[in-house]
Length: 146
Image (tube, rainbow, N blue to C red; front, side, top):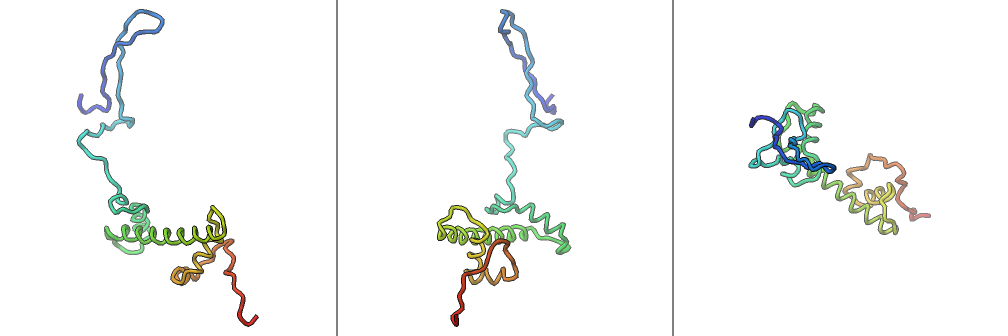
């Protein structure tokens, strides 16, 4: 029937050791029990992250905003905006950290490179002024009076 999740067809199969031909039923299953396969004309669903053109998970951020009880209601654009801002901040920190790693002739970014990147950038330093980066060290600074 058309509502069944499996479709059956009959194939003739030859046995390797005999010359007999037998009929064998081949079943095509969708992989999930009790659900029908998607019609061929239906498109696959696109994520909100893909629609917004961001890498960060918009759906997950929306869930965090709702479950965190920051407000009674959460608009549709709020998690998209938050994802875009977080993605921008991460890209900025990673770019500056990568430059700091390259300056130190390293291929890998370590916490020290992140610390140098943040503290040498005025705006990031102000944003993350209360943040302590473990194993980050301090900026090299020799006081002028010494």
